[in-house]
Length: 369
Image (tube, rainbow, N blue to C red; front, side, top):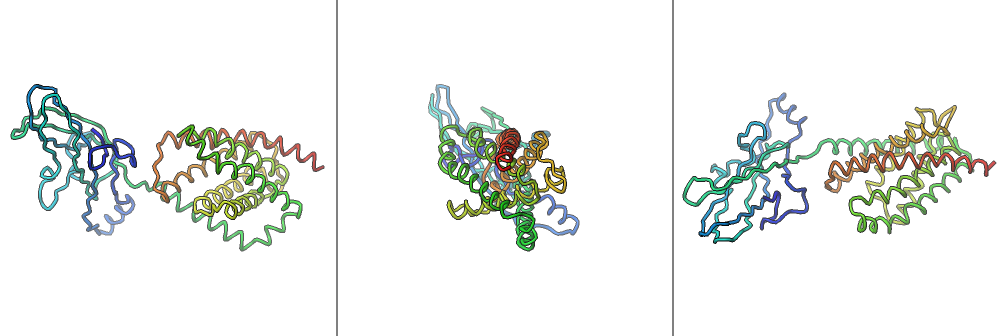
């Protein structure tokens, strides 16, 4: 059994195997409608296909009918929302395939899958039955676990909150730009611009070529290579800059320089870039100020604290970045891939970069003195 498939029964590469994509109404909206005694009147059906390969290993030609049921994995009862009545008729009238199998042959057929708007996400049991045409005798029964994937409200809420936070940060920055800029001396602003330019030249520009190359060579494990630039080198520069200028706002200005250079030179003025950079800046600024790395009595040379703060901040912004990609570009990521990226790229590489960044900052401080 191939779920989902195209109209010919072959696998659909745009969706993960053994899944059905459904349109599930928001749980919060359902509760609101229950309280207000309102209803959703729409009766929409989403449809896809499943492929079934049937083989005849006998010596006679056999006419068969292939049907299916989607069962509750706990109770074993059929779930009607996955085989809804259509035009007042039972779904079995539509959801079947008939064929004749010669001896020693096999055939791949596709069956339509109709899903009503009331279907809920979760794990189900797909049961395919092969009957001899003209009888109720079941020759073959095959079971397979499937997962109904609904609209994920977590990434949607994270994307909305991240966008709102980014816009708020930008508004506050422009409304108090004079106060923020007055905190820094001219040489501080020059140094921040220099670090932002170095990060763009050493990270953004090389990655425009290495990003695609690493995906072609390493596949889903390319983040182990790209993280050396995006995380280790980036946070080495950020940590060293904070050592040199331990003031609130230095990371935000650094991110602004990266964003502007990337936008004007490579054309990366995208919503995702804006949301991820602004969110990363806000989280890093807040955590460094709260933990005492920046502020009135700054202590930016504690390696463990700097590494943990940068690692946690990058894990949060990394997960938000995945959520934004899933919502805005309708992409799908496996849980293991997200966790591996967050733990290795988000924390481990970042911790290493921040650890060595303090050493770099101390050496640059001696040179400056």
